Image (cartoon, rainbow, N blue to C red; front, side, top):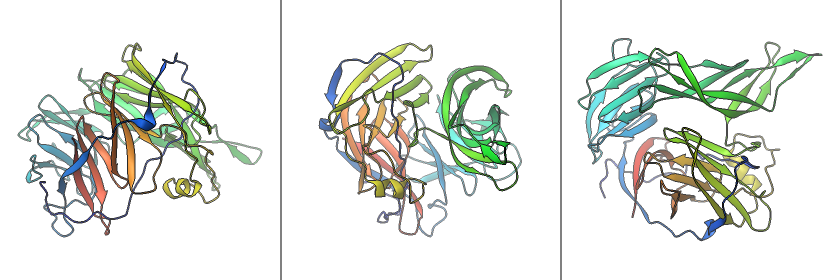
Length: 388
């Protein structure tokens, strides 16, 4: 196993939790595999990069992660804004950008990715996308949405910006704020809002609307000024539709076609192409588990009086890997491990993967998982796991 400055992972954890019920309106396929009986896929940690006291090796706050065709690993260091370059063994071999206002310098790098052998970096504060060669040279920069954009009337959303294959930019709302309306001395908010996913040109202008998504309204407040509330992407405990994840090739929808109950249930995964054609659909059976309400309150940002559904849905989160595979999280935080059901790009079941519950996934490349884990001192470490 190759390591850089290892330490024992601590108990601190950040878990993503989801509840999503109801139907997405697509015709369900025949029930196939039993999700609870999926074969176990062995996973081993083969790289851990970080340090408690060496700033050259260690990280302050790890953001987005990308891997180039030559195996080089690119990591956003968000606290001291730059992109760190590591070789496949985890050794630091370079730095791209740095804090500043000059060409190729960053204020708040948020998202990175690879196109062929070119690295792109989105700086949300400077509202720019930068393109770099594999040698780290700045090739081009152009405008892109930054910290906030008005995606819908009264909604200020913070988008995830991604450069897609045709050179345009996709802006997907991530979280934001909605302004409420006041009447009779009180403020009111809708339960949810529909906001568009936009495609923009390299001048930052909207080219078209790719899709719409539901954002859920939570934490309303009224301190005497303008009433406002948070808007949050699914998954969310009050979600009333499918879990949806967009990627360059289209989107994946997970629909609990039978409402979770004590008896056998099913969930359906549908992959839809960019032209809205259904690429494949798979339905799995599963036996629902009772909800541990204490675990819900521990892992979700909710109050002590929050009560979730009596029964957990079959899928609580979705990831699409860089090569089109689909990862479906089963259950919530709590315990020592998180479990994912893994499908390949054709929708065929590969098996199930277990990772430490403290692992925050940053990137999946079929058989490689890049995650962030924190030690007892809350110091972040970049960890790579391999399947098989």
